Image (cartoon, rainbow, N blue to C red; front, side, top):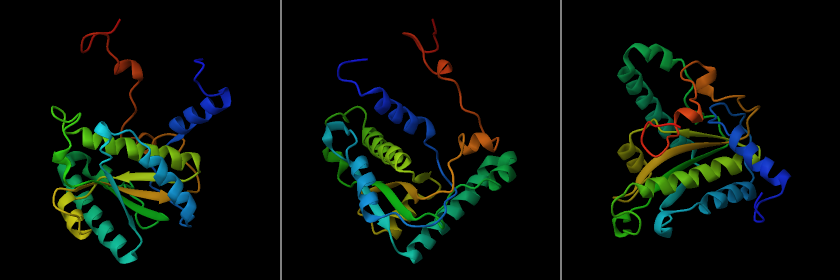
Length: 216
């Protein structure tokens, strides 16, 4: 271990949070204490970002009426996705894809407006703003798991419709609806694997040496 490394117990906790993080769809209601919500959001805010642009914006949805409108947008996209899946349509419709009505806290993670002004690290890869927001979401996910909170990332929505619903400025973009809150238990494996929708691939299949597709 490097002299700069954590203790054995601290490293085990970090790797445990990574291994046991789950995309949760089942929540048990309850509440998230304000100080706890602030703590996990601060963890998100500590994420790396290209050019230190910090493109993330989080909108806390406290209105039950607004939560209902977001659920409607997601349900409409769920139906459209099922239609696009063709022969797997019925299988998809049986999956639980969100916990919007049941979670204690609902957040929308979005990209800021005016991102074109940030060129550092984005001249050839403008999508690095999205990569930066994704890092913030992952930080939030891991912090939530360490705190015993479940979190689910919902991407089934039409971005422009959600942006209009939330009064977002032109140029900004919602990327994720995040369900956060207490759960009865965490899934022992990814839910889509448990439901037979897909299976995780091994790391060895996805790591190459020097050239694409080449393995030692």
